[in-house]
Length: 344
Ligand code: TYM
Image (cartoon, rainbow, N blue to C red; front, side):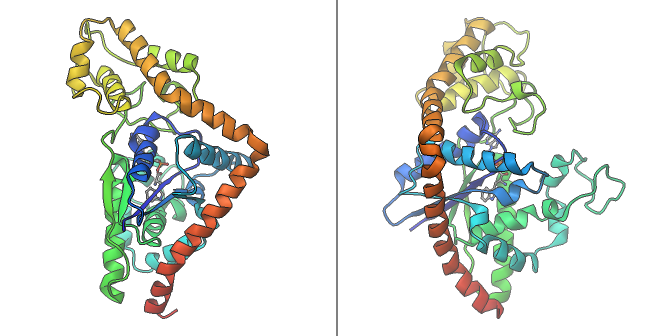
């Protein structure tokens, strides 16, 4: 059977990009899974601390992320939902993989550069950087590779921004297998159709949790009112009417794409949606977009608050414990082979 693995950082309530690019796909894979398939979805708290976090807030965010995952319809009796740090094998395999991971390859990865707002040609050892690069942020992709490979995952559903990391995970697997024999899996990337939802304020950049302006993203918990306000102030252009052309009209086209993906194939294409709306004013179009987002998110939002308010969180703790146990068993099956092969 297939082994599906994916992860999300508990660094706040997920936004529409996380939902359309990843979480909704996770749910779909769960619903379409064959009985012999395994699905693992991890809240990657060890990745979150590559950037300094407030401990109390991190604990809260982890719980909220778990509640969100249940709210979108992940079923803890079908999918293994767990906190990364509750399965030490992730860190153990990371160490083993880091003993053969290439510094050169890692230094070419773009994420640590963007997290530190450095130019793409920056070097990890450049001491003139405004902030010293932390080892954990530099080796972040090795831990991500370990997440995937420790479960012998075959399929990894992610958004476009994770493609480079998955390429690296396959490289780690190849490197290990070249030395020790065919032990680790070769995971395939599953890119969601909505692979890159853009910022509402700077529509040439991806929608992101780290963008300074909270109006640049729609959160899954946003009220109807907040959704309307954010869409109303989304950056568009001065061209009359609605059309779909991501090159010349990135702002309007991003809104068209959001509607297209939220309606999940109900319209044949983004062009078709734009054509249906071509005579609307931007103001009327934005109202339609906000209605559409609210219609698709309101159920998730209600479930989310129900789950968080249930029995003081003991239900969530039970889900996390069960997921942690099942994930540990899954990881152990791979780790026995890895330790034996390496001579540990
Ligand atoms: P994270 O937490 O940044 O994002 C979670 C998922 O959301 C997708 N995503 C987007 N998709 C479309 N449009 C956007 N604007 C957008 N923003 C985010 C991401 O591609 C991702 O799928 N390093 C990972 C977490 C991770 C992981 C793993 C993923 C750790 N270990 C192993 C897969 C497998 C991350 O920071 O995702």
